Length: 116
Image 1 (cartoon, rainbow, N blue to C red):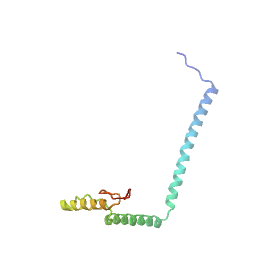
Image 2 (cartoon, rainbow, N blue to C red):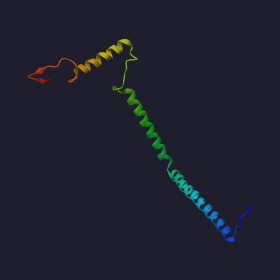
Image 3 (cartoon, rainbow, N blue to C red):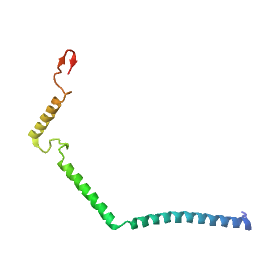
Image 4 (cartoon, rainbow, N blue to C red):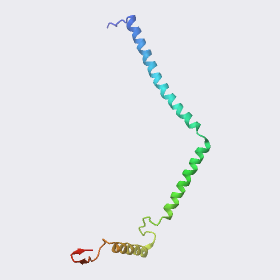
């Protein structure tokens, strides 16, 4: 098997291409690293009292939302915590609400061909 001999120009072009490729890849890595470092510097520039105030306001908002959910009258209640008679009363109240609704079940009265 005969080995191909490299000439000085082909050897120099291969080395130049390799160096160019290494320089190109190193600039890509350093560019992204510099932008990341800049982002970290922005985060360090925030005053501590602003961050503490933000966390405190978020905590108060969460506590208020929790209190509103616990004290809300419009929560879903399936009657599981009230026992059998409580569940019966809940069914009765729901049926009465449906019956009192204008489009609810029951006898429809007609006046002169107009259904009310």
